[in-house]
Length: 614
Image (cartoon, rainbow, N blue to C red):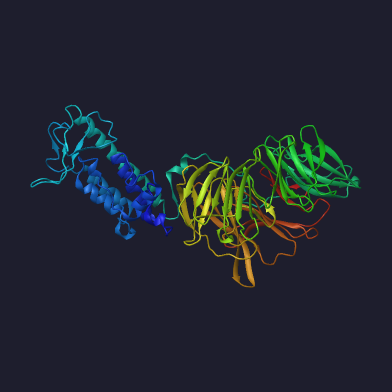
């Protein structure tokens, strides 16, 4: 707030001149020890940025030349057109100004005592037992304005050194941001803060996708072959183990297979219980799987070390894909005739908490699960509730009086962002607010696309639909790390708004539906590295998808993505590495057969049915 430009506070389009304004405010603080409009009342600070001129640095620093005020005043002009053309021009002007000598007579001999000068004003915050004082009375004939009194002997050298040090800090800061802004002809502007953030991976990177795989790594075939009818394929796994669901006669099995060689490690009999999707604990020892049999909403807890299973009835129907967040398994479903319910299990499969929720927004990797719903009735409200996955505690609750003010929420690694009618705020998973973002920026939905559940991105990434910009923010401070074009709104179809945002490695992928005409459109994806802003786009799927077909982004090697299209239970599937412009680097098609056609990504590996592809 202390460094925000007027256009930033008003939600108007931003460019490098907004950064120049913020830099000038920072320079003012480095020179004087206080931000120009600092106040405990945020409204007063905002009013200062919007309507008050920049204060004079010479009130606190009479040893500086008046031209310093002129330079800072121009860099903080309320209208961006009144500022310097570039930050580099501002830096050069400020360097020259801070090197200019103070006016003649600016320093006088020994300081007056309070009784000697009833009009004196003591400058606060200097930490000097003999502080500089400034005369408050108007300048008289021959005066050059307010005059400072020389400190006692021995203090002068120290003050000169402080002035020089502050000047160096200011110029270094401005020069650093000039480099950030210039970036290069094709590079986005990246804040130096980005380099200091820990690199968090939403998912593991895959092996190189530059070349089409020469053939499968392996294909699993049970022995003897006459004992099985069909395999669903890999439904979960770790770096060491692939979990393959298999039907043999009327019985179901879960075969644990080496992810490196495809050799059988252990076969777990399941009776009539068929598993179709599993989430694996962080330590790789236990998996929680969705069971598609029975009417009691079963889940299976699989001990991957000892090769045992436990079937747990939940009483829920419509159980969604389970996922892990920290050391918790999360499932959602609904009780017959009742509301939705979210449940968390520990790494041993023991129920930790359960909570009825009017809607459930899963945010895997954020540490929270959210709900947004209308309370109904004549005084209905839109209520956002965010719960911590570790213990189910509600860490944030927001209410709005109309659907037009519906709060929206999206996750990032270890936290979440909330957009309301007034602003967007960043929070830790404990519900502590870490930053407030200027008006105009809004979250990208982070739920599902084509029914698939994805991990949240490494950092908060927001969009400004008015200016068609996308940006990543420091989750600790709210600082813009980089900003780029390419939001390309509006969108229509099943997603709406700016699309959904999902995480792969350190990348964020924005999945959108774009229309050429009311009858023609296609699904595409635009991706960015959350730490550098570099990225590209690719086509995900056209409008010619068969009924029941689904397109999915599976992963990335850091520069190329791999996607799949499952055309339905009897139509097979395909695996592709799409390129910018709509073509594919390569495509592999899998016909429907007894080995299964499900294409899935687990622990940095890609499987098609019972075959490891990458």
